[in-house]
Image (cartoon, rainbow, N blue to C red; front, side, top):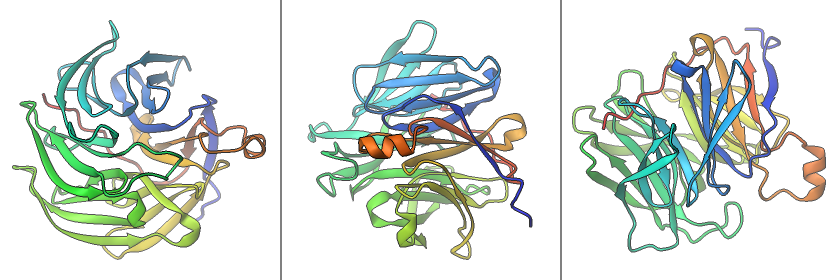
Length: 301
């Protein structure tokens, strides 16, 4: 397979402090993403190239489509509904009420329309935090919340196998991509195991998405790359390096979901590094991967 066709471009020089949670919205030909510490949800129109944003009142760590219109987002320790038209936020549920220093991190909607998201302690510096403070939750369509497990360091990338029988999950400081048996009907997960351990130069596993061949793509924070993994063999199949170190997450989008979009961060970079990496915090588009993604699932509540 010839890799020379892979092309990487910065489509939006956004200067995100910590860009995360890219989600393609087919209906508007747009990419949604968040800037966590800037408390912003952004929507980039791939046709007009314009960016709209909604500022909220706490760090916003993930955004997802909502079946009934608008979006859902994790803001602080709350699952929220976001009305884009009037920029209003409605709280659907709150978690970790006993942990004042916690906030949500990455989240994604499962194939049945539940919004999975996990928490972490607020960082004192990038990847420096009180450990084992986080948990993994999901918001069901009826707005009740289930907690799956605690003792999480940095709850991060997540996705589901194409047959909806496996849940893939990253707790960043375990330096591992894990798999669980997953029950689509009940949303229950069990039988945790590691399917890939990151190598030293790959640094910290962050956001993740699955492609139409059932392979996983993981953004490597501080590693300046996305890697493609085969969760069945535990082998790395491909590495795509980007011109920025702090790659945070990835999703497929664009026509037929044949393009990959990658978010990144600039927080934690010194002046010299920022000069070397002027596109840090931007949104990148990767074309020519030769594989497509699948559409994101909308929250059903």
